[in-house]
Length: 625
Image 1 (cartoon, helix red, strand yellow):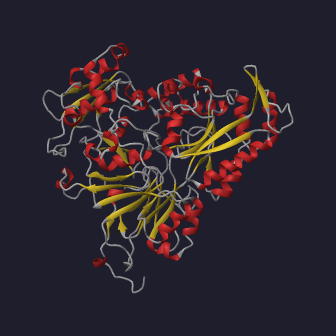
Image 2 (tube, helix red, strand yellow):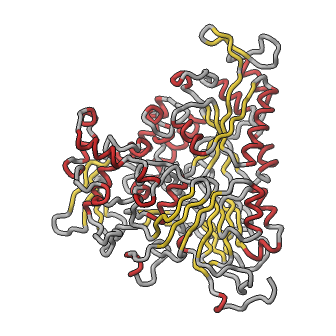
Image 3 (spheres, one colour):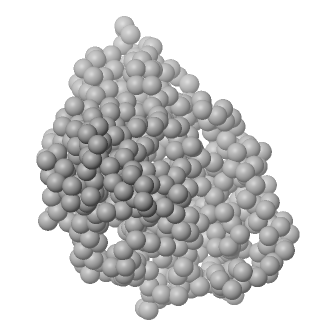
């Protein structure tokens, strides 16, 4: 999912490691072994103290081996939406603004400071940092910023999931007195008027548009639907080249302002980032966390098999992982050697899991199993969420009730309660919806469009996650007790994501990756985001919800917006387009040979370019491994 997401500004929690080799990972929720800071301190992260002794079997290579479970859909600067893609962009690209992982707020990135805002909230004034250069030596300019906006907005650019975020951008104006200053002019007040640029890498115009085709057109023209329906051969030719998959897959066609570049990408195995030999950040004296590039290389290795992950960690083959299973980390923390070598913890976050139900199946010639609200509520009653939490997640997960996780405390609707596991209630609701077993085969059926149709459907899940596979099997068994036959279908990530985009599914197990920024719910919940390629995969369509979403988008004041968000949660809870599952703590391990071993609520839980290799020459070494 696109990272534009959630915002939390309440009481802060900081867990600080004492630096011992005792098992760690007690940072699970606000009630377990956490130090509560004052409300003025909005830090939410774990700061692990460096070890006092160097172990003789620790590697001295300044390379970070990062474990992940899924590679990017692509690395195209505009055309993609996977979380791994966005994570890589933190090291290969730069943005006008970005997230401060420690404070859970926005920070300036390529901008000198956060923008000044006019009294009417429509004009945002920025100044670019001086000394920022592209890999070819040319300086970053306001023309690059304008080109970036045009590229994202251009109707021929293949990035429908981003279009709605730019609806309020009217134009970008250069400052006539200073070439490094410009203004973003907005059509209206919008809660993402600044935050949206935290997901928009600034592109080099001369790399992506050597002929300056998009300079001929204004943002207002590109946003005009009538303009989009008119042939523009020059734009079409530019877009055909710009949308070419080579700009998302082939190393020689990847370009960005970040200090790292992709030097190897072995599909399904590993992606290697190498620090550039000459980069503008190298001239900064004492660079901070977001300008530093301390490891020589960052190698992302793809491993999904659960036992293999544990073996790799026990043998120190990974330096960092944020993708350990709950049971796996609990078992690892019982191992003395693991605790000697790694900091580890359960870390709160803004991500959550759900089961999606296809509400518009007939549009893609699929059977309408879930178009009745009673059926959707019955399905929710047939998911043994609490039992599965204990069985597969060690009871660590928090139940979701609607579309906002409990970590977003001020806007979370506490009046909503989890739907209980109740087979008899489910049977009653299914009877009322007309799904009955008329032939005694223990599978309910119903006449749809004149044809007797058994209640038998596909449940799509991604491969590799043992807990999800086990949950799917438990749900399959539970559904059968109520007369529903479920066929579990495992898919690789790319195929799974394609299926969701094309709405070719009955039911699926999904997850959203949020952040601490204010959330624009249009991408996932507005009816328009089903038909235009957005992320409303299930086809949720409710006029009242659309109106609420439209209001939330323009309500800047938190105290006025939060009640609207709670109302939206209640409406979605009532309609049950998802079976809401869990907010699961992230399981993070960082090798102790690195300093700056901080663990964040923001994904992926670490900031890899900030990891600083310790030196055995500066500390005593233990006598035995």
